[in-house]
Image (cartoon, rainbow, N blue to C red; front, side, top):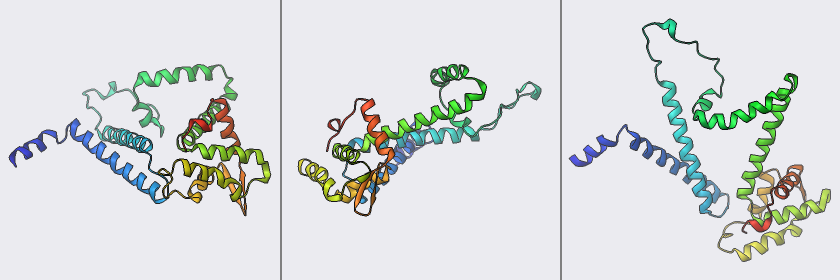
Length: 236
């Protein structure tokens, strides 16, 4: 008992203790996220589980470190006149300065160079449009990580059907063929679960008895073509 107490005292408050807290917290978030996916009928994917665990653990570490840093009292100096004035505080500053300066510079320098080539009256528009492109690309990359090959094939057929769309019976073969080939992965994953992905991601909508592709769905297909991706690159 004494040895356990000593071990506890040794690790408490140091980096090992913090790492245990982050890993435990990341595991809890991963378990909750996976439980929600299973409840919604999505099949278990170990690659996705691992990704959620890594992202949640790193996010917890960043949050804890930033919180600890923000609570530290400012250093005391004998001559306060020597303390430089603090720069204007922006909401993003804590996250920005939490990133290594070399990493920030690697990405910030070309952005500033790009902005310098734009006239002052056009810079805000240029920056907003650039950020919009980045956000859309990240959104499409996230969809690509989770979408199934059968869903891409269905989206392509929906695109060919145009504004007329398809009935559930016409789109059903894409789901049925995948569920036969990948029976284990589709256990408990119904056609409605499979179809809900289009609606949840804003790729297609269901109006009465017709399923119609949305503008975002067409843009996603363009994204796949422009980046050399296809349904054959994804399983089930």
